[in-house]
Length: 227
Image (tube, rainbow, N blue to C red; front, side, top):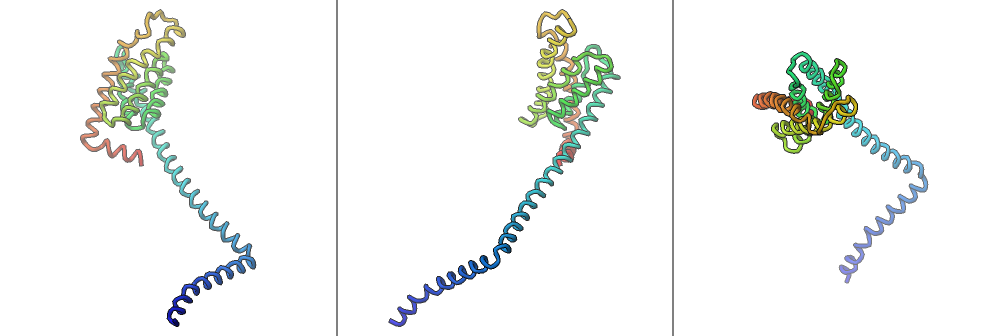
């Protein structure tokens, strides 16, 4: 009977201790309420500062990445302008499409299209038509998107040829017909002129990228650009 009484009394000891601790906490909170509130808000502030620091670090990394792509975009635009201006082919601008393929791989579709637009504007300042802009902005977008989807260099080639040789040739039709006043019979009129130039220039760009890939420079350049 005495052993049973002892075992019955043992579970009640922790409950009494917990109650005592709870009562002591309530008394201390009533006595020092501002101290507990100060501790609570201090912990909240520390948590907020940690989250803000992580967000600022991420923003800084994105800013560095954007700066690299902006610099490379400007360099590619200048390269396309120089090559297209001083290396002349009759009714063709293959080096524009050569740079479009390079830009689609290295800086992506949107920066690549921006490089094409900048090149076209500079060529327009030298006396070319608006086709210099429209013919350089769609190919990098389609080529860059296909490269992101499939990850192969030939997907960039197909995107550049279709984007420039077909889509840009159709998109430029209303500008030449209604702004420049040319007597054009069909929206498909410029496809035979745009497609060979796009095919030749994109092939040159893919050849250079294949050489870079075999030597291992392509992966190194992409890692340096994206880190």
